[in-house]
Image (cartoon, rainbow, N blue to C red; front, side, top):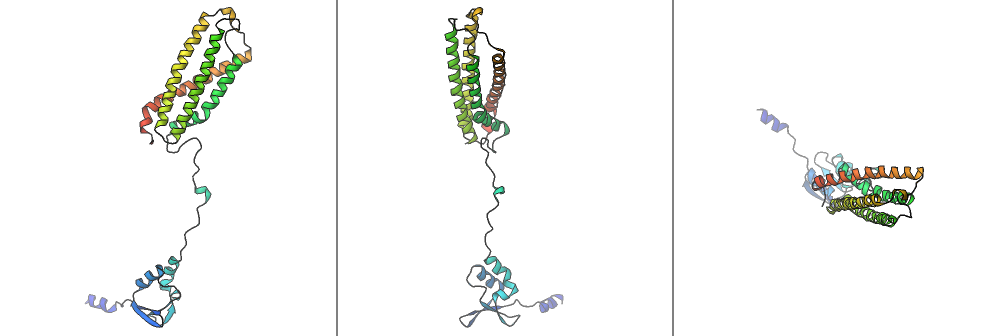
Length: 247
């Protein structure tokens, strides 16, 4: 009984006709007209007739199709503000962990300036032996070789840091190889320098001013800190390079 009452109270869906060249085209459903509007087959200026309202009106005058016509004419939004665009860092990569980014900062920014500082400091300090000592030439040659090796290592570290920032798998390998070569060469040069000083006459040591000695002490402290970071970098890359997002 209730089902029969529901059937009798249900109103049939409204039917629509479109005016085409003076003729009524239809009947059409509400969805068919909405689809035609969205696909631009008809315009909102076309007249339509509803079985409910019993009158002809432009589609733009029917509230049933206002949202459909608005969607059809919807334009894309303007470009997002500049603040929403991420700014890519100059010497780091957000895809790398913090330690890898510190390695990039050191190799690309700090290491070249440190090399310049070491060269100026060594030129200011000069040789340990006086010019009259026959071994002074060997000490000067060792200083020259040390500068050249440091320059080569600095350039190699810069290349490795640039490739690491670019997420290239060759970056860590270049950095590791550079640190190993630099460690071996500096150990040999240090032993060479110690041997020269041990064989030299104590009276032939060059006298230095207090300012020059302070600069030399500061250089030694900076160099020890740098070597501590380099060895940390060596062990960290040997252990974690395979887990970095490199290609």
